[in-house]
Image 1 (tube, helix red, strand yellow):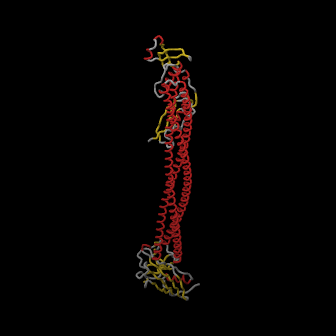
Image 2 (cartoon, rainbow, N blue to C red):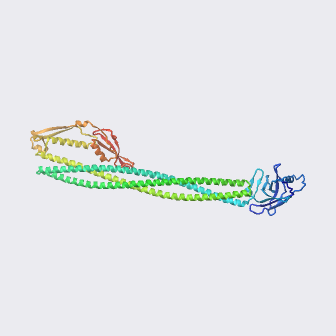
Image 3 (tube, rainbow, N blue to C red):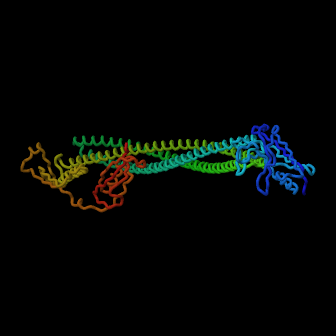
Amino acid sequence: MAINIQSIQFQHILYDASNKAAKTIKVQVQFYNVNTKSWLALTDALALRSGKLAYTLTIPSRISTKNQTVRVVREVLKSGGTPSFRIINANSQAGLPEVIATTFNVTITGDSKITLNFNKSWLLDPKKYITKSDHIVIASEVPMFELMSSIRVIEEEKDNAIAQISGLNSTITSLYDERESLRTQLATAQSNIQNSSQEVADLNASLEAIRTNLTDERTLVETLETQIATQREQLETLESSSGDISAIAIERDTALAEVTQLNDSVSSLTNERTALQNQLKNAQNDLGTKEQQVADLSIDLQTVSSNLASERELRKTLETDKANLETQLAAQRTQIENMEAVNVSESNFEVLYNDLQVEVANINIVKTNLEQQVSDLTIVKDNLEQEKVSFLTSISQLQETVRQEKALVIAKETEIQNKQTLVETLERDNQKLQQELEEARDFTVTDHPNKLSASKVYGSIVNDVIKADEELVNSKYKLANISLNLKTTVEKGPNGTVFGLLDYESAKEVNSAAISDISIDIVPSGNTATSVAQKMPNILGLTETAVRKVLLNNSLKLDAVYHATNDNSLIAGQSFKQSPAPDAAVEEGQEVIVIFAKPIN
């Protein structure tokens, strides 16, 4: 609908950046010509009164040809359109116009007057001017001091959120390092438990070896008791047959004394064996307890692994929250930049400002959630640290107990070896006693102590040679052919030939014609030259005493070598290498090399 406008009134209120009325600045109203697509000056420079602009432009019915701008405005108004106006800074020295206001409210009074109210504007700080391609924005339709305050608050909250994110990153990194440390400690604890299990298995093997040694010792003691009983019967027989010989009586008393000592030793060994068996039972009970402790520690390990999994899930949640917070901050930063880059309307700014307030509230909620999660994570970390300290303490106690049990078993095994050595010594003493008793019995065969049967002489000499050969077993010299030339008297006895061995004194009382020369040559038996093929027994894990016994039973010889080692699975004195290997072909009398463990220190 066409109207006939006769006057246009321009209204505007301008404040500076400190929210005070602008007094020194002058303004100018411009009109946009859509035909030439350019802004044209509609008024001259207008002064403000207390920051207020109130200017009325009269549009005459007849317009001079020099004032084409007013003519175009009138034509637009007559056609029912609304022209575009703006207020600029008339004092601008720059090449581009400095725009103050562009939006306005239109009020038509009657048919002849129109009022354009540009409302209020606030000048920007010169550092905050917005430069466009063809103009510069120097004012805003909202109070910039309030906007800057809100922006400052938002920036402070943004900085606090960034600081919190940085703290969360540091916390997450610290938790990650602690998790890696806990993983390392768990791996070490698992390795220690495996070592403890291996030590328990080694202790069980050692206990089995000790049981075997005790069984062998029990057999030896029973054999020794049987031999002692036989010797007692032989002594009683000797007492009944040769009560008038003083030398035999002395030998008998000595033998009885030694038998008494052997009985005492056997009784002592029996008591000690009983004590060792009790100690072995206690060690087995302790090992059972340690195995239960190892099982409990395995359960603790599973619990710690579950806690670590929970911590990993919590860390993923924190990383997700961190990414979301960074996305929100980036969006907020983009909105602030867009708000500074363009001059928005008051209604749009209020919407944007409300959105910012909502985002700030959301950020506060996220911040509160993150703080709560950090608090929960700190509690979980403290619990994990306490569980770690308790777990390490249990592992340390278990390792110390296992070391003590291992030392106790080693001491018991050493003690058993000493007892075994004592039993072997008693066996050798018993053999010597039997030999002396046999010689005493030989003296009773003839009427003279120097007269012996030829078979006894030959057997005694051969036994002495065998004994000498055994004593040279570790020497580089061996006995070969042996020749003896004896001066004897030869008689015919009821049981065969009797030799009368002569010494210097007894030879004086014997006629030289009755003295005979007896030559004896002793050579190795042809049977020893032939070897018997057999399989090498498995002697790994045994002590030197047990190894000697096994090899002796298989007619083999031992070459013992002790080698220092730091292998915790080996017990001092335990064999761990042998040559030939188990089940290899060996010959009777062959020498076997066995390497036994010896501690480095």
